[in-house]
Amino acid sequence: MDRIVIEGGTPLRGEVKISGSKNSVLPVLAAALLTEEPCVIRRVPDLSDVRFMLDLLRHLGAEVERPDTHSVRVCARRLTETAPYDLVRKMRASVCLLGPLVARLRRCRVSMPGGCVIGPRPIDLHLKGLNALGARLAVEEGYVVTHDAALEGAVISLAGRHGSTVLGTGNVLMAATLAPGRTTIEHAACEPEVEDLARFLNALGARITGAGTPLITVEGVERLHGAEFEVIPDRIEAATFLIAGALTGGEIAVQPIVPAHLLPVTALLRDAGFWVTEDSDRVTLRREGATAARDFATGPFPAFPTDAQAQMMALMCVTPGTSVITERVFSDRFMHAAELQRMGAQIEMEGATAIVKGVEGLSGAPVMASDLRASAALVLAGLVARGQTDIRRVYHIDRGYERIDEKLRALGARIERIREA
Ligand code: EPU
Image 1: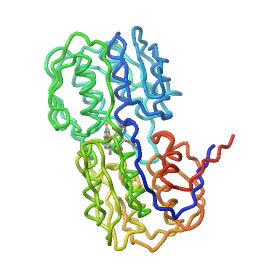
Image 2 (image 1 turned 135 degrees about the horizontal axis):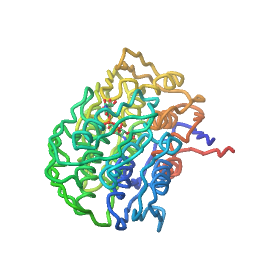
Image 3 (image 1 turned 45 degrees about the vertical axis):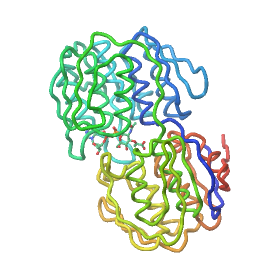
Image 4 (image 1 turned 135 degrees about the vertical axis):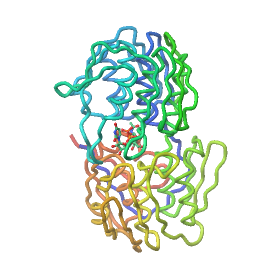
């Protein structure tokens, strides 16, 4: 298992090339199963989660080629229905195979994804939405199964206790493209990744309007065709690098990016006193003058993204003042707090709220990565800490950040990956 070792204290400077969005490309790759014709997807990030998804597509019978590191060609002429536990358990996003399989084959057998360290991850809204379309899904022996889906457009609400569901909206959207008649999705997730999936489906010949708003309409079509498509840049990777610039007192530009996708993050950084400016596909940040801690709560887009909560907490740990951080999407997503405390952070936990008192500095320590974004927060803390931070289990970070160590080194960070058998 690789480790990342960081000597903190260098301000980061320079421009970072942002990779394609992980959370956009995973459902887009699954959606390529909706057509027998070839699809070419570009700006695909080179991540272990993407490799897991490609393994699943191959297992289901699709031909998968990688013409270059950042492109994938998928051709699902033939398709089988079983996504086994051993492949699905590696990645929760495998759940978004349900929509395409049900739509294309009218049957499926997809292992139930497990929970994960960020808390329970139910799929009740996915099942409710697909069953409202006539999927007739049932859970049998750990698998989500249907033998005789009879899809037909319907009016479906995806409102859940914690807001809507991103991959659940994706699943219903994908199935609805091939369901006869009109489907209306109420309380749809508004994340840019949902909008991107709809853009891909429309490129395949689907008839979707309203994606990116809580009300999406789909007019079912008989078949979809192949297409070429480029996914959006990763807003969470960009947020992570901007926060790295803020933490280390440097100047960072992220490019390419859709600045509107970053708004909840850039607004908070500005409010905390950082200088942030946006061009058409670039955002630049630097520290200029005094900064002050700010409270924030995560929520569905356009609220502050849960996927950047850990990284922003790392920043608040060394920003003067007190920050009250409320996690409203995944109430247990605070695994990083204990590791940050080991580096000298002052954090008090109260249920789904963390109260962070800014300290003068953190000190390097051996720490353990527990999930993707928690690991990113530890890397950020290591960049500003005195001395050495040794991060174990970095495979978590490789699931969602492409060559993060190399990108940070290019900005001046003293960071090394130690490869271990
Ligand atoms: N929920 C339900 N029932 C469901 C589905 C979700 O109650 O059937 C709840 C969840 O437990 C959670 C909330 O609804 O409290 C939102 O979950 P959502 O379904 O939106 O999450 P997801 O679609 O499984 C995606 C991202 C996550 C990101 C969330 C929220 C992918 C592959 N994953 O997950 O990304 O945190 O949306 O924005 O797109 C990450 O990249 O680190 C990551 C975890």
